[in-house]
Length: 187
Image (cartoon, rainbow, N blue to C red; front, side, top):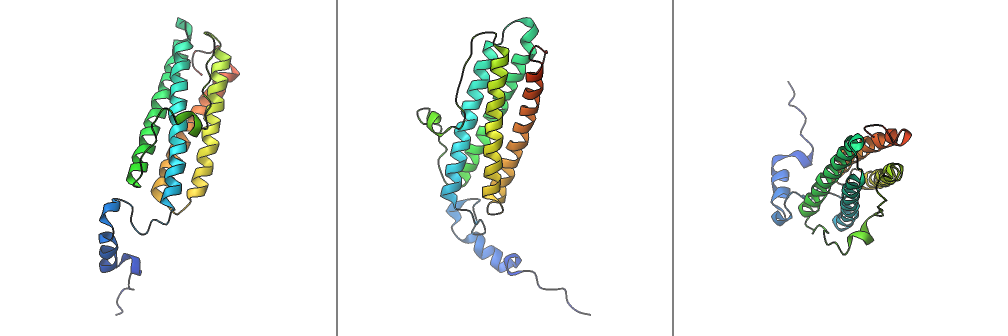
């Protein structure tokens, strides 16, 4: 009877332990992470700024939607703002895990964000929904490119970006449906 094949070197107990003990100050970032961490942190900070600006825009737009018949639209926009803030927190957490500082400084948000904050007159529901759809589509494109760029070099960051992308695509789908009929009770 032959013995089972030897596991790859990266999975042998001693090698795994030795690699885990290397640079303990790096926290969850181990030597097997092949990403250029400074570049990944910069990318995540751009996405963080975009998510923060997007959340502020949703919040502002929700406040502009008035009238009892449009209350569901306002609630949807508040929900989008909350989801973007949650996404921003996840990005900031990942930036910290990689050993960098998340850029929350309001002075830098407009320069780093890919979303341009725009507000509207009260009641311009079509303008509001259109601008929010444009913002969602900008984030979708940015997240798609980020997923491709990170690739297999940092699987944890890639999975985070994929989750954020899925959420943004769902938001864009609902906004697009609302744009087809902006007077509907829910976008």
